Image (cartoon, rainbow, N blue to C red; front, side, top):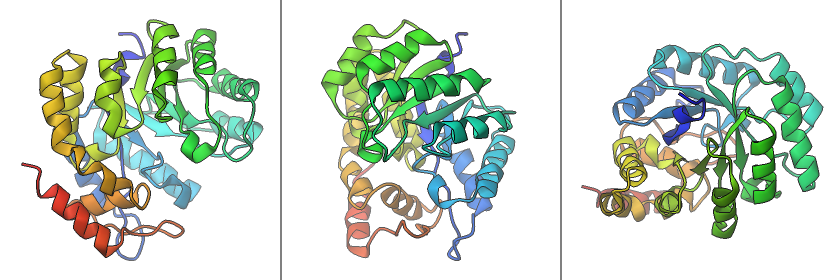
Length: 296
């Protein structure tokens, strides 16, 4: 198997559940891990945006990752979010000292805030791949970083090193997505970073997605993705339509407040979050619940 193949299909960007006192709820986390595995996702992404890594200490991040590795028991590949620092040299130091046992790939976004040039982004990722012993998923999320990784840069990285196995594309720019799909190497995956457009992305040639809603609806989203990848677009659209009205309420106050609320509605964890992130307001919680009640 080519090393990229294990990241085809549905990855779930796992939430980090908190108790009402804002401590990590490991019992809930174990239940969620079992929930998504039984739901049919293809791999787990730990400590991403949806996992609220920015509100966790380094020690908590390591504990969550180790716990996830232990409870997954090798049943699925695990991707670790690695965001550490916008200073390339500091991030390199983190990678050099990292324990990669049980981790199949890292996912890292381009540097935020500083708005580097495309050459700066390229050099940043190339420095990371020099020290990473495992594959890397490029994460392009300009809505958070304020710096778009252009299609030409993604393709250049993919052609420069076999360490780059995929891009999680969350720009929402279909022209850019189509350029990556047209010019990428054959074994380089394009993954949707936006749940609502995962189906049309796959229809254009993408290979799957790293999902938020799959925390709450792993079976429905994974089945949709699988059907689309296999070319059964009619079945895929039926499943996509099933979840379509839920998506807006998951992001109305930002991610992950919406998915944490959905998880509470499904009885999987509380919607507790740590400042500066705040819980979904009651009025939008009600809208979300009403949308979820339509899913049969």
